[in-house]
Amino acid sequence: MVDKKNLKNMDVPFVVAVLLLLATSLIVLSTASYNLVKGQPYYYVELQTMWILSGIFLAMMVNRIDYQRLQKFSWYIYGFNILLLSAVFIFGSEAKGATRWIPITSSFAIQPSEFAKIFLILSFSDFLTKRQGKLNRFRDFIAPFFYVLVPMLLTFKQPDLGTTLVFMAIFIGMMLIAGANIRKFGGLLLAGATTVGLALWLHFSTNLPSWLQFAQGLPLPMKEYQLKRLTVFMNPALDRSGDGYNILQSMWAVGSGGFWGKGYRQGTQGQLSFLPEQHTDFIFAVLSEEFGFIGVITLLVFFSIFLIRGINIAMHARDLYGVLIATGIITMISFHILINIGMNSGIMPVTGKPLPLISYGGSAMWANMISIGLLLNINLRSRRLIFK
Image (tube, helix red, strand yellow):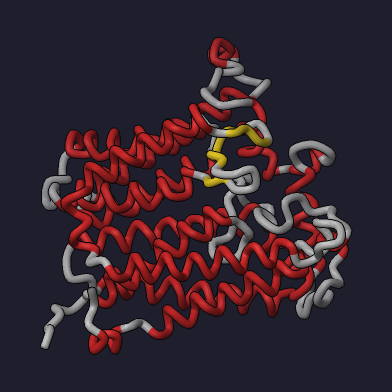
């Protein structure tokens, strides 16, 4: 437990940025979900308020436990993570072709993959801490890769491509900060990206040279709709009523906002429900349409303060374990922001990841608030505490 005198070490700009983002969530959600539930215009706002308040409570509870005590439970955390992800296939309920949620009551379910990212960061931080200075050779990368691969495969099987990509981003970010040889690790990443690109080209290409005809239509371990989502963003007009529909509607919403926006609840794409999942995956498009360039810049300023202060917390952590936890969290949230805004703007594939602290969702909000609690935990203990 942190002494009250040490609360002076609280990162005020970080906390203010979090509160501003949460307030933004409620404002944008109040317009994005206004027409979604007949007779209950504030249905999702009320639920989101509950998720936020309970999330703040979780963050406060996490903040009370010295994060260093968690290190000795790393393998238990990892094992629980695997059990939690596996439980989805036994107790999970299917929705929209995916089995990602475990129902708790008739009206409430949790999404284990949201919490799995936090559990992975906590356990992987200890795993890498014990390998400090031992990530210089190619073979040194094998154990960390398989450590992350297990939860990745379980998530991919659900299927949840977006979270699988987040796991990969967390792995890369934490490996680099843990001291992985940049030249060798970077070379492996480049080779992996090239292999994936080549595989996609062979799968979709219909005009291959004669010497490559045998590889045309190369089978990939993904469902066809997932593959289309990965590629349709490059030319969504080719499938206006199918996989390209979401991207086109979002791009129109983002582009039509102009400088000042159309005004609160004055958007067409959002208010007329042309946007799919406008209160979750595509809430950024609603904000862009109604609040315009000014609204987008304001949101990005809030996120920038949040991330910059998060990086500062990582840089001043008292030990490598704390540095890696903070790094994993900042990498996770940064990647979420990147892919969500990217898919809303039509420059990245639609992977179904919400905008952190903004999109509606109980599991996502709780996971984000737990992450924030961990960052504050590391920040408050960045200096040796003296109890009097």
